[in-house]
Image 1 (spheres, rainbow, N blue to C red):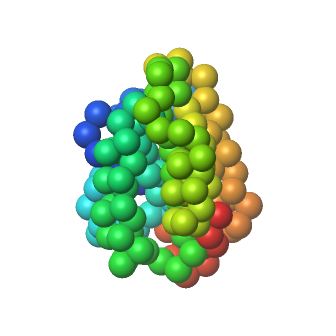
Image 2: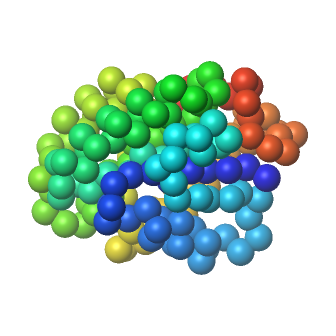
Length: 148
């Protein structure tokens, strides 16, 4: 089983991302957990750093989470920066988001958990990247992870 950790500040849509995917994939070999605990980052195959596109402060709160992540993660594990609520009037320009992601070596993606269209496809894409790296994977990839 693979583990994906969903991290971010309060009210950015972490729980909704998890619930949306669980409603979509009944028999998944993936466990999604919501956590900002840096020790959960060392046991995961991928981390989704989620922020609210209508709240610039939620983007900057990712800095602290990212520092915790880099202090304990296995080398080169998969990580994404996810801008949620793209169905609303955004407070953060896309250039700022993409630059932030580039500085953290993250893949950047925008979604709307309200519309739920993007969430299952996004998670499936992440799962496929994990599986492509190690198709016989039974647990966290430890030192076999690669950066995205």
